[in-house]
Figure: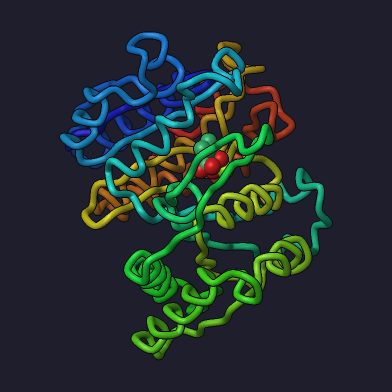
Length: 351
Ligand code: IPM
Ligand code: MG
């Protein structure tokens, strides 16, 4: 089984190293052999090749069964006037691999509830799976440009969705809800946006294919509120690209730390891209104190969704929960373990 590693920038290389070591332990314990190739993406790719996503990286990913990515970006490449930016590498790889659905599970480990700024009673039982549309909407819509008209600057982005783009991601949300608590919350802004009215219409059509799953609609603004007031009432939340971007950062606060949250980006086949939802954390890069758990839990999703290894995936998830329950904590979780020591704490529990 071939895994393409894209460490990227900032803390990316440190956390990907730990997660890869977890995969190796899983391989040993369960008798699988994983082979790895490593490729450039983001700022480091700009420095070395001039492009945030070199063709060789895309080819390497297409040739792999799954892709594990660290993070991209950093102050060095942040000039708003720059022609190329590390983040373009991320958008291009999502589009290039046709990864139209982004799964972001948010669970609250009871031991970490106190680390969340929200009251503990609001966190009890939170277990949400966000399904964010990833290759459409405002991020990719055309036209998109900037111009100067009569000496005044003007900029345009476009929010466009076709029914096919909506249907495939909403269908996935329904299928996943069938393996969970059977509720899909479709989030839109149908009281204002035409694209949202189409989204809602298609969600209802898809809902008819899944009579055993409950469908509810929620406007994005009130959804943002419900995330902090009664997050436990959600099961699967499906929404368009930018709403999903915003809501998933908000929901990450529930878990107490961004450092624990994984993601999977999926397309038509089984090949997927897996990455923690946090960024490259340039302030702590190279210090060896980053939390590797978001990447390790992304490895669990990789085992489940791309390699079909459910037992192995569940073992890794259990190992992370047990490590945290036993008191293993990096700085973001209020502890003092190094990245490597946290990785070891997890690996020693992969049994
Ligand atoms: C995310 C990030 C990216 C996004 C950025 C870095 C382009 O915020 O994965 O949520 O907006 O999709
Ligand atoms: Mg984001």
